[in-house]
Every structure is written in C-alpha cells, then in structure tokens.
Length: 92
Image (cartoon, rainbow, N blue to C red):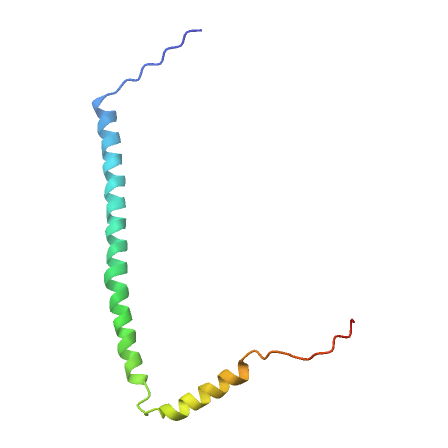
C-alpha cells in the first residue's frame, strides 16, 4: 500500500488562507491596542476622578500630633509581647 498524497495549492486556497491569517492578525492587533488604551488611558482617567472625589471628603481638622503619638505609644505598649519569668512548671 503505497499511498501518496499530493497537496494541491491553488490560488484560491492560498488567498483564503492568507485572508484568514490577516483577519486573525488584525483582530489580535485590535485586541492589543484596546487593552493598551484601557490600561493606560481609561483606568487613569477613572483613578483621577476618584482622587478628585476623595479630596472633597478629606477631613480638614488638624491633628494634635502629641496626643496622637501618646495614644499610639500606649497602644504599642498594650499590644507588645510580654516575657513571662519565674513561672513554676506543673510538669516537674
């Protein structure tokens, strides 16, 4: 059984494959350009809109830094790990 398959390429098949390849290439390029524009322009514009909205909501009161540092120091002391010394072990 000696089967030889010959591939016949006609100009119609070649132009069909070329058109398909060009359509896929154009769609992938369009997808890449769309993703680029979305990431670099649209998201930036929405982030600047959010920043403008958040600037309006920022509290205008001044903070007493001495009292803030005092409170943060107390919280740090309260949550710090304490060493346990002179514990009598019940397992001795």
